[in-house]
Image (cartoon, rainbow, N blue to C red; front, top):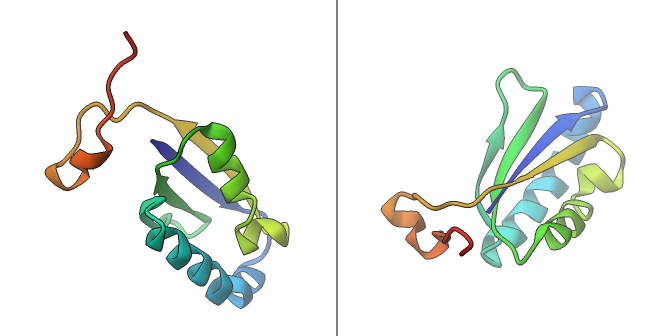
Length: 99
């Protein structure tokens, strides 16, 4: 599982102008099952996405398609972790420690 942390590198007016395209992008990846949760950081200097994927390279490639990233408005920080304990709703995504 992955935590994608977005940090805005552009003024909020530029972020807001591209927000509909970003939300559409999020929706596509919720539809594919890649995204589990997302939202703005508080204070509003970026956002967070909880994602699942095959590997880090695939998630980084996916993040690079975010309209915010394409336009150079955000920096992404990708953190991979093993979700060995999850809420019942996330049980399909529970992971095992390597042997």
